[in-house]
Length: 173
Length: 100
Image: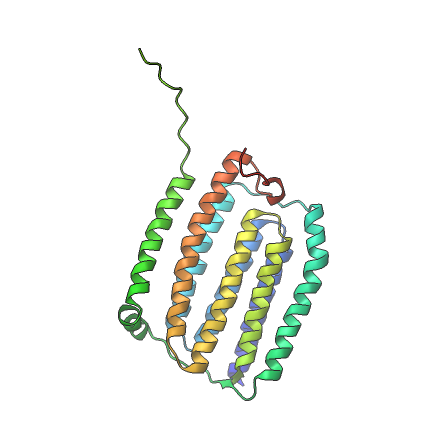
């Protein structure tokens, strides 16, 4: 009972944040509601027992990634978005389509799943176990991600740096 | 006790909210945030399935998804800065040419 009520509370917060992200016009409001979604998702991870994932969710997603987003929004001085013809068409077709799609998914899932219930803290994922897995079973993917992150850092630096002014071709004496 | 399907439905709702935001939003930064929302929805289903099958690999995969999402956010926001520098706009309807 406790598990179900906690799940429903945090799930409601997550869905409300996701809908608020769509409704808000100013990007900074959308960013703040996305932080609310991520925080409540980390609570859902804790309910499932995934401690490490919950901590990383708060530290990396709600912390680092969203700070990056907020910084870029403030750096570019992003204002309210204007509505265009294309966005009105997308709303007319997108909202009913999304509602029908989610209802279909929910109906199928509720029909298919029999008595598969999860207990509170069903699968504990402490950092020690996750770290052991990362450095034994998933060592190669782990190293590949480190290369990926390095490439991403260098790419971000190159892309965001100011382009050098093209110097006029030097005339040969 | 919460059925597995409830977690999957929550993750499906979050994913479809992300898809909807990707379609209806016109600000390039908000579109980017919708992509993050989709990734979060998928992560929730990863963790729920990991708990259901008692396989910790699911949680390790969530870690990898987060790393790739962080790398993608860094590169994507750098591209947004570069686009804004040349176009002076964040509206995707006005960014319709590859070359200036």
